[in-house]
Length: 144
Image (cartoon, rainbow, N blue to C red; front, side, top):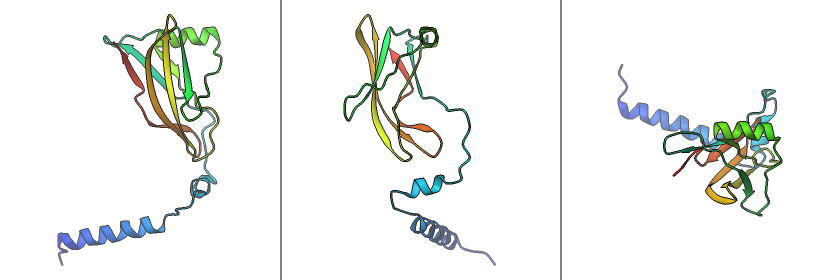
């Protein structure tokens, strides 16, 4: 017996609808989903990469990450040796400040050379069960 394509589509849509209806819609659902999660011991940082038009890393003199909602500067002091490594790689940390599970935050990255802002970009970050992740924003920026 052969099922027509419409029947398969109807069955698939019915299953999908049941799945969506059964999902929790309250704010605590992500916390509930995280119970029993096994998280890696190593925290993965969020970074933005700054390159020039030739795809070479750009060494910023300084940078800052700002919470857009309240203007708070989230950047923390970086040991000079680590910052030198960042400059060599054109890699700069997107600090987020503390976030609760399920919380999201809009942040602004600003990069400076000779105390002049040369690049900036907006990001939305959020915390899942184990890690902080990026919801929107380009992680590779080209300085022209």
